[in-house]
Image 1: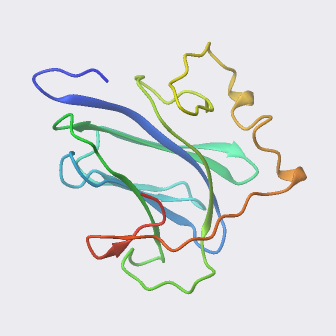
Image 2 (image 1 turned 90 degrees about the vertical axis):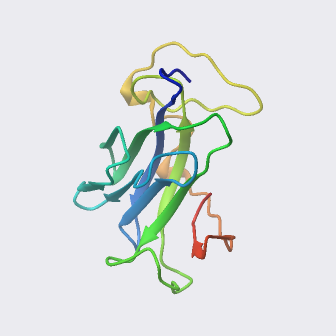
Length: 166
């Protein structure tokens, strides 16, 4: 990742999300970034409430209720950073939860680029890819008419707050 003046640029981080029982996804850079490096994404209205620590944030409709939520910030060091996802119950991310309410998520991606590019599956090593058409983004990897993949787990607590992913 590039940068100047001692800063390390974190180029776009994105995730695909769809509202279910909850509709507000919060993405935050938890360590190695300026304070308030977060954004609240309302998956029903497409409204974004971003903290002042972000360089940019965006939400893009992908069809069928799915949205690509992206944030960019500038890291202050090359140490390991943490990106965290929270659910907001409409008033706070600090709530116990009910054990059944959530959102659908898919295709998280951190990349070295000036803007988010279409989802590129990777495993143990990074992948260089040619330019893709937007229609390919939720292509063969995701087909809502052929079923779903469901994960249920209990997250570890980060500084007293339960994150849905970290």
